[in-house]
Image 1 (cartoon, each protein chain N blue to C red):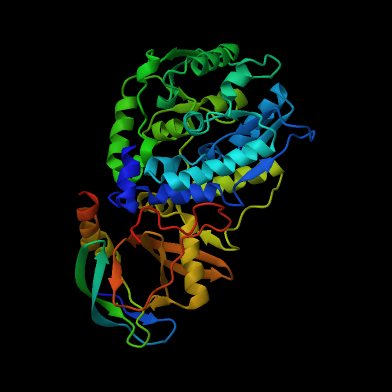
Image 2 (image 1 turned 120 degrees about the vertical axis):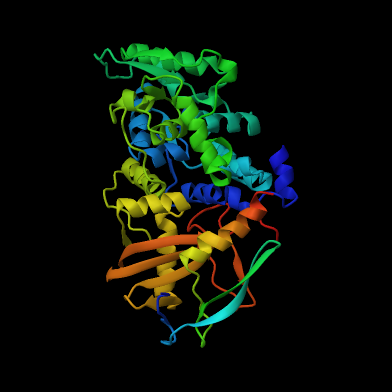
Length: 62
Length: 399
């Protein structure tokens, strides 16, 4: 189960929102928890070391 | 050179070299670098340049070797900083030249003394870019100074002498090293006789960033050629071989008696702290360093986690400081804090607990290079406080 997160600045729970990510010409889109008030977001380890790392290495290995 | 062109054409990902370039910035920062005149205040005849990796490997090395050198020549000054090798290897020639120009100015201000180097990579770079600066090595100076008191060893154990690749063609330095070993009654055999084809340990060229498996593969091959413990006279070789599981003493360990052959490798995240400690030791300061006034608590598993991710304690503390001062952080249902900060070419995430005022426990850390699109611009920090050259630049990244 995804952990429950609160924005320390706004004091509200984070909500899922689709965000685009970019590294040079490589792009991916993913739903991640975001603060509905200030936009602070959370990228978990699984996404960082999984799909993002694969996309980054796709470019770096060229 | 090829890398210079790759960098100029934006074809060299900054991820390959970023860590080591920021490492250089840290070695050049105010709290790690130092220029010390000779103790007697006279015009220096020698300027000792231990190199940035010597103190990072063991914070006692620079002071201990400086003390030996002072026995050989009291008019010896000391310069703790980096020669610029990481930016040279990254192909960032403009930045590299600015680093070397600063070093040249210091050398001129000191009256153009003989530069005494403990690192053969530094010597290679100085000889190539600033040929007007006359250089020698720590080992050649000590070998030529019979008045320097060295320990002697009674053990029958035989070592294998592993010359660094940067000693290629430099018969003088090997002769000096052998002479010092003979003087200390250390038994050894030379691992690679051919001075023109000395193999690399795997450190050179910032290979870590691009292909860490290659470093391990090269190191494994090197240590597999001889079962005896190694003697190295390059701090990078010493640590690479030790990390691969080979008993390896630095020649400085034998010259000073500081360590045996089985010293573990300092975690990557502690190497920067070692540099600060090296400076403090030279100055006789005893206060432990608190990075930005913050104490970070972590265990050995977390130190290894940081090593694997090339995230060091400086980065972790920067992220925590950012989270605490701006409140740009999240809190989970366990009460753990999660903050992130863009540090040059990567976003570092740190999960942490607050233990007391200015004291935090690291729970987890990881990074990614991808950046969100369409969100408000976030805070970023590239600058190492006090770094005179290089801090604040997005090395190798297209503007």
